Structure formats: C-alpha cells, structure tokens
Length: 279
Image (cartoon, rainbow, N blue to C red):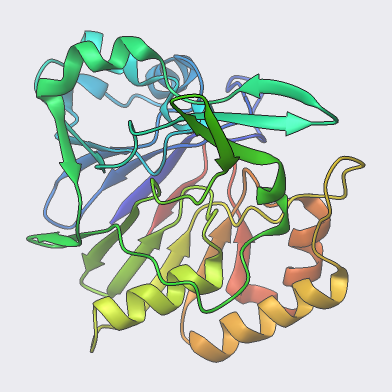
C-alpha cells in the first residue's frame, strides 16, 4: 500500500504548500485509489498536481469527520471527479459545528452546498466491511478523550452542546503485511480508536496507524495533556500494539510528538506534505 500526504500543517519542500488540515492519497494492494479527507481548501489538488497524482482517477473518498480542515476541499473535488463515491458517517450532517475560544464563536464545519451532491454520498450508520476496507462508526470510550475537544461544539435547532464526535469515522485498510488504521484527527482519542478496532476486527495484525491524535500544544484558552499524560498514552500504545508503526502530524502538536517520540523511538514518525510511504 502507498500513502502520500497531500495536505498537512508542515512540509519539507519549497514546491508544496501547507495549511491547517489533512488530506491523504492512498493506493491499496488491490489498486484502489482513495482520497482520505480533503483539507480545508483546494490546496490538496494543487499539491496532488505537483506530485503527479491524477485525482480524476480516484475511486473513493473517505471523510473522517465534519470539520472544515478535513471536508473543506470536498466541493472542489466533486467538480473534477464525477464518479467517486464519498463515504462518511451518517450523522455528519445532523449538526453544525463550531469552536468557542475565549467566548468567540467560529463555525468550523462543512459547506451547506455539499447537500446538493447527496447522490454521491454513502452515509454509514454502522460498521461496514467492503472487501479489504473497514469503515467503523461505533467508537468505544474506555479511555479519556483529548482535552483539546473542550472548545469544540455542535448545534442543532438553536441547541448548543459540546461535540460528542459521533460524526467521526475510522478507516481500516487491510494489506498483505497487516491492517493500517487511519485516524483523521482522532477526536475520540487514539487509545479509544485502537481499542475499538481491536474489538471490531479480531485476529488481524495492525501494521500501522496513520493520522492526527488531537494532542495539541499548550494553549491559553483550553487545557491540554500534561507531559505525564502524554507519556502514559505512549506506553499504552506500545503495550497494546507492540508490533505497530505510528505516523502522526496535523493536530499532534510539536511537544506531544517529542514526548511520544522519547518513549516510542523508531516506532513513531512524523508525516508532512509530500511524504510518501510504502507499507
């Protein structure tokens, strides 16, 4: 399987641009061409062109959740690719989403124009397997959720409440070497995602875990994980998945990465725009 990062907060190339968001190109062992998330704009398309990736050949889009930095570029994609279906959690359109920082409300969800393309969407209300792919909607909460979620809300019919992230979707791809889990932002918590996958898909080795962990750096408007808590997360990941390699970026802050890396060593690596992986 091949994974190429099209959008991330970081890059190591002067010719590839960045934004706060995530988009990945995935080519499976079965030659399926998957676009996983679309960043917040059409930047993923610009980077794809520079990386010689033909987005018109994409077979399937998977959207991890309803935030603008993962679904914002979807409208642009639907204009150039007229055939690919878009797989999403069925509850993604049930709410509008916003952040609340120091009393300032900012909408951070999807464009209402997307509803004009409902015929392209496959809305999943339960776990589903399609050949070598698993789409997991039911995520268990046996571990704490990321503290950064505390500023993230949803609203419906003038009722505002903390986002429960029921709109998040886990993608799991089976490869010849084992399964690879894609977390998007990991708002439900990377440990909960791991536990859920291990329960839902038994007797399968997890080769890699790829995506954001939503372990943000220190902010003055929200509590974040302490170094001790980050260290505990690293130990639990290594204990649960001793043979797995982890790749993270986007909403995993620099401090969180450094603390995790100190415990996980070569098992953890950062991704960035243009990074190509063969797994």
